[in-house]
Image 1 (tube, one colour):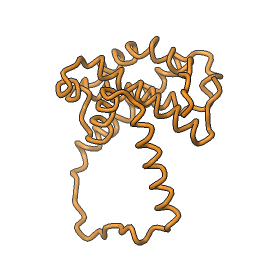
Image 2 (cartoon, rainbow, N blue to C red):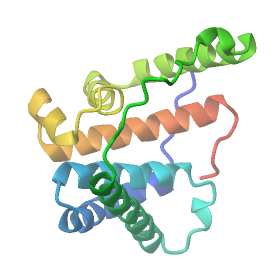
Image 3 (cartoon, rainbow, N blue to C red):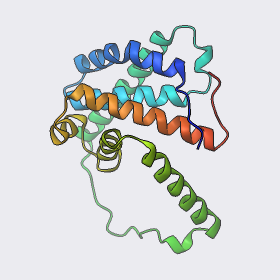
Length: 178
């Protein structure tokens, strides 16, 4: 399996601006875990952005992403307070038998690919990512469970996401130019 070199632009932006963006979001949210999660989302979006090499001012660009996520976060909070959740008991569950066999095979292939990529991570990074993305724990809860600092959890998750994104892009032939 070829070893991927980290995208220097992504790694540099993460190192240079992560703390600033986290601080910015923590000052504007009531929950530090929400701020940490939004900061992760900023860098996930940054990794997904195809033209990031063309961005002349990455700091300003990342902060705009953070502002957009913050605005969306506030909207969701506002809606939660206005609208009471309701349960639709009449809704029919979607059955797997309605899906095309090709789609099921593609989903299985992506799952196998994801398992392989996750296996390449160090155990601590894999654990942090799994707890966050698959078990839905906040970064603060992960820090407590793993007995490490919140900052270390943030780094584990960010680097794990970066690795997964780069590896999956590489395997799918959609690598980003460095």
